[in-house]
Structure formats: structure tokens, C-alpha cells
Image 1 (cartoon, rainbow, N blue to C red):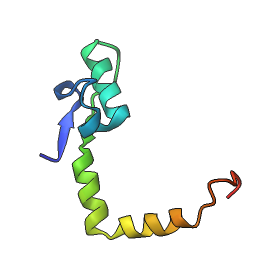
Image 2 (image 1 turned 30 degrees about the vertical axis):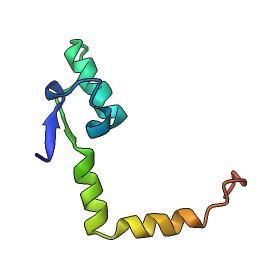
Image 3 (image 1 turned 180 degrees about the vertical axis):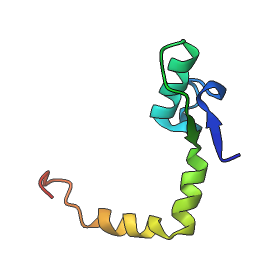
Image 4 (image 1 turned 90 degrees about the vertical axis):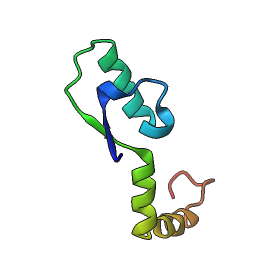
Length: 72
């Protein structure tokens, strides 16, 4: 499965839906007025990064950052 509807998830699904996805799911369950929607699961995003070699590019860019210099 690649996606799940908000109503199929809960706040406990952070690992598969991310923080925002789990929050939207929890708000939907609480009957808060949230537009209908869906979550692309984290595993799908990970697979996308792997298959497009973007993980290597992201790591290369992150290696250029000096974490002690907030302007970098």
C-alpha cells in the first residue's frame, strides 16, 4: 500500500505517516474540520529517495554544512 486516508490512521502512526500525517489523522478522528486527504507513507518516500539516488545527493549537501555556523 502506498497511501492511507486520514481516517485510516491515528496519532499513533507517526512512524508510517510522519508527524503531520498522524496529527491530521488524529484531528480527523476528533471530528475537527480537516479537509479530506491522504498520506503518502514514509516507506514510499524512502523508496523514492533510494531509487532516484537522492539520498546520496542529500548526504553530499549536508556534509557541506558547518553546524556550528548558523549562517551556513
